Length: 147
Image: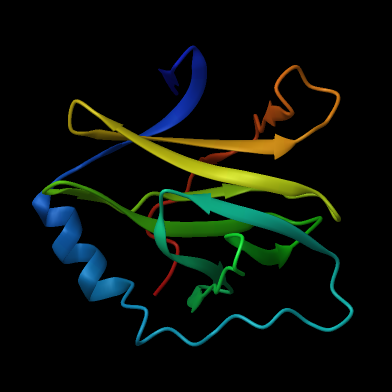
């Protein structure tokens, strides 16, 4: 696990190949929309500085559609697999990660690029934390999980 601004984060390489691979595998026009079950326990995830968020369910990629504030509903109480694309200048990466959101909680998923690598951080909103956010420590890379 790499460190970002003093916090652990997940690292991904930024390459032109990654952009081509993303275009072939995660095109938003090809992925069906994710619809949570009406009675499902949910959490909210905000994709900070990211575009085209997707969730992987049973090996299939579904498009997430964040609301006007940037939040998308995801299942809670079980491991979720998320991906989104990040572009900065000519660089591009599509980090895929997994973590277990808790029902009724709100999370921020952010990416920062440095030295041709992407650093991903997942933070849970927590009013009792010094800055209102707490690092999610069970987030881990999850490449190659969707088709």
